[in-house]
Length: 499
Image 1 (cartoon, rainbow, N blue to C red):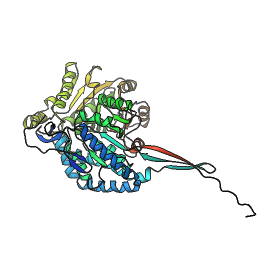
Image 2: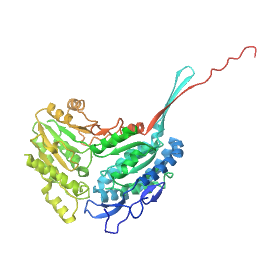
Image 3: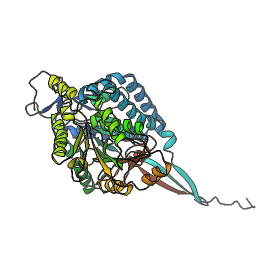
Image 4: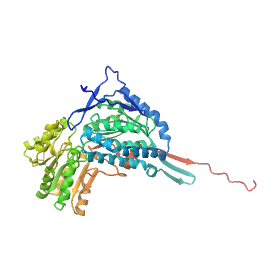
């Protein structure tokens, strides 16, 4: 699609240079980037071609020889300078995220800070990536060391324009790899600016970005010089990416969707639980794989449910602190509202109906943006789609269970395995649930149980395709291989007493 408005036209960044797409001018195509606040166009992003991918990968490959030979301490110094640069531009980057994604300003700053935490971990690689040396028998020494793979690529989603690229970028580069990033075509401004800032930090070719839609992904996956692929997106596409890479014997870590269940037992702290649940399902307008999706109460808990309803009704649309921003586009808005409608039609009780929230309706009507109010749904039918599908919006489904066993059975039967949480004031209850939840990331009184460095991020089942995790020590494991060297020197010849 081509905009009829004169808009800034984004470019790829390859070899520390801004490069327009290599597609002939007569056939070059662009997508219009809109802001969710008003759905007005704000930029054009190129639909890059396989020729653009070739140029970016070749630049990264040429840079790898020199970059990988630098010491890890040397590379850490580059990352430290990168940290200083990004910190100095934090407000500018946050405003870009607000503009292109719709997050509140506080959420955007929080996203950047979380991404910088991974960068800080990568700066510590000289301390945490040490190899091992051992004399395994007299005169025989074995050692192993972490060795970079080569050119790696990261294909990232729209929901975290800064943080998700930084799940991989700092560790991959810090370990000695060079990189090609494919930002989401829905939110390309932030990473474009990040890469522009990076040109004054890293040698040419170390970090490159290629814009485009799904058509540019396959050339990246198939390029023989690309040694590893990370992907974050839907489960359907994550599975396809993983299968494609496995067919080529290529290292891949593809993160998919989620349906996270939060269990509240009768002894939970009502105020803490209610606030945490609301923060979890409405933060970032519910557009995150770690958001609360389903609250399972063990037995009726009317006080908790009422507190959740009251806190949800108090939320207002906007970009300020404790407000809820728009969802990414009108397609998402319509899909989210369809789940609320379907639940109502199958007999669920709408405790909070985001479709008719006057503040959000007025905001949508006056701005023409993709605003949708948070919804809280009390389900009676276990077959309701909202209880099973990843909605990716500010919708909380509640289901009242008769026992802890029923709550665990519901959580563990879902095909995803990203996150689960137990709300309780009892250590025994916490241990009971954490030992039985089938999920990769588990919270106790934490509705968004994201591990922090040095721990790694990653689910199981249909939430992750790959054998490793994506941040922390799992990131080091993914972006390197172990080189083992066994050494034996000839024993010294003993001198004769005659000599």
